[in-house]
Image (cartoon, rainbow, N blue to C red; front, side):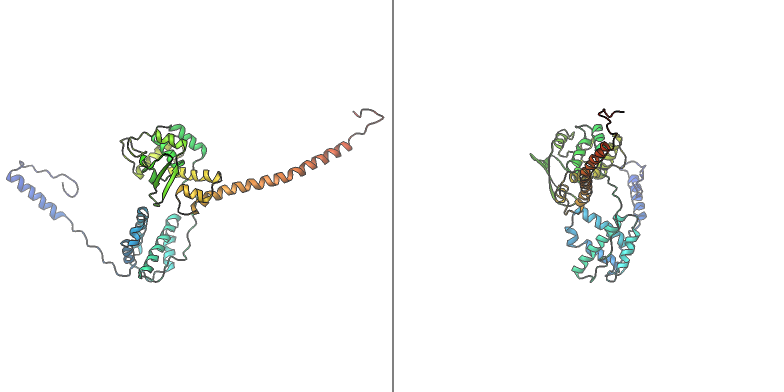
Length: 352
């Protein structure tokens, strides 16, 4: 086969001198058609590209979680392509703000860029390559509404009705909703992670070990999971799902249940957070269940639940306070209406 993956047929009899000659001719033709790869372009010392290259080979970068490495490398390589020629020692805050504004249509990407540049320069300062951090003081953009909408109770019931126990879809549902697991962990978790009372797994995203109590609903889902291997979630061929492939499967299951296409597995994890907050769970409890490193994400759930509880309490308070006044007002009106009614005449009944 040649460089374009097209077959080159040798028509001479195999093993003959003509076959060997034809083979050598094709081989020489292929060798002569190969275009030499260009050498790596020169990277000037103290350019932004150089600083990024130094960081990507550093021990600090190597110690980051795999998911963090993937994200940071992607962002930094894009920066290197766009602005790698700039001097890293004189990069200004205005330049970082310009990069942020360039990504304004996707606030999450803009904020991640700021975060990664800040980490890059914090390392650069410690390494003695730069003396200032141009990302310091650059404001993050306000985030819009999350695209991961929590599933409503009605939507969850519809999904369960379409996917009974004993299906892969139902098992995945309980791992995400009752377990609060991310997609990256749902496709990894298996029977080896379960003991008598809990599922225990190191999260892929954070590296944090989480222990999740196996509820009755989850136990039934795990016990009836159709997979035959260690993984609870497997393809029809008995293989573990890739994260991308599993996302496609979730979209198919959602469609089969007649639910909106925007519902995602992460929306079940969000619904779990909402459920915990509405039941009165603290931010620390929610963070522990979902495996967050701090309570900032958990506060998103509790603030909404606290708003409802506080609003309900306020309504009950003024309703209860106004109730006695209404009762007294009613009694007064009743008394006045009796006194102002038709007076009895000459011992009559007073009826008219």
